Amino acid sequence: MQHYDNLDQLCKQLYEVEQDGDMVTHDIMKKLNSTFVTPIDREDLHALASRLDDVLDMIWAAVDRLVLFKLDAPTPSVVAISKDLLLTTEVIVKAIKELRGKNYQHVQEYCIEINRLENKIDRDFRTALCDLFNNTTDAIYIIKWKEIYELLEDASDRCEDVANILEAIMLKYA
Image (cartoon, rainbow, N blue to C red):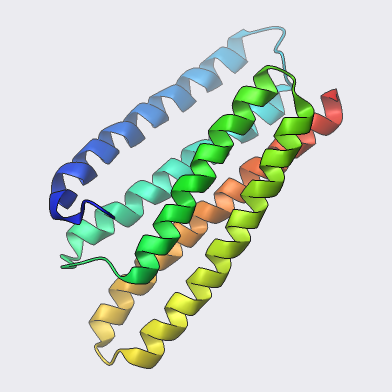
């Protein structure tokens, strides 16, 4: 959102990342089907890979809508939500690294932070919708931004799902 003037190019780059993420997810599923022993239960690995893929899919979908809808500039709300979503994904990366190292205490701390950020995004989402409906009369504009806000909030919800999966894994192995 801070480089909105390059939105078309950034959307194309994000699409490539999303496609790469799909390939990684498919590779994980293939390996799960051909590996006899896995370091973590198959179901947990499947759930984790699927939810991570969902996060990426929803982020790309939101950015794609920005391009498709030809919105001139980001709203302050979408900037705030995007920043918190970026922070959330960075915390997920840290949590997964700690999981690999079996540092469960740190994983737990990161899961708490993911949940805190998800709650903040929920509050910002509700505020954004209120502002949108109370301060705008252009119905098309409202529809466009509402869809983008919902996609970002859904991405945040999938991040919370990732934290829940990580916590379930910790319960099994801690």
